[in-house]
Amino acid sequence: MSSQTVWLPTALYTALIRWQMDDFTAIGFVNAIFGDKAESQIRQRRYRYTFIYRHLIKLVNKGLLKRKHVDDGKRCSHFIRTPKFDEVHFKEEFIGPCALVTESGKERKSETYESVLEGLIARAQHYRKGLQECDSMLAEYQQLRVDFSILDPAIESAISNTVAEKRDLRGRLEAVERLLRGLIAFRSAS
Image (cartoon, rainbow, N blue to C red; front, side, top):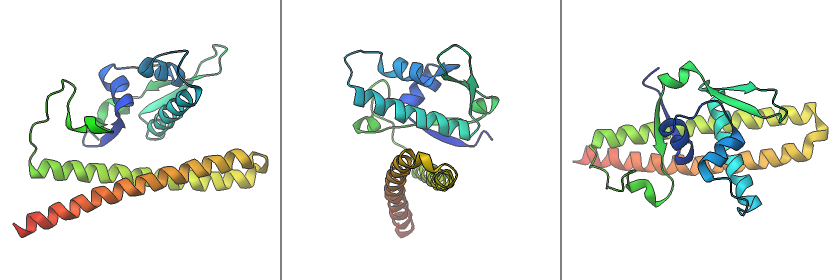
């Protein structure tokens, strides 16, 4: 199990790995990462919450986190780590120009061909797994639509978001696979 690699966006990686957060609510998690500023725009806060919550649920589905319902009058789920969490190797998925810079601001050391290839393969597997999760979510939404027709507008919105996420993952996977094919072709030609 220790060979399994899970890629986390920078915000989740910072909180879960660097800060070692445990037993938290999604709202508390968002406030810890982005701050609890009253002046922040509602749309931006909603986007951040949705982004964090979706990734937390993915970790719950993988068995790395567990939802604990606490009767504190707020009806918020608390997320706690499972023993499986400590058995997995986490890597930070950089988004944006900071991908070439480490925490301390120094440039990354040059990597070997094998380590780059290994990283790309791991990332491609991560995206494939995300696509499978999207397929499962879409199938579940279709079943929910049949079972609870009154929720059709909410389900339609969720389907739309999942389709957009799936499209994004397909694009990312295609980019990684193109790089892999190019690297392998370059390596065999040399």
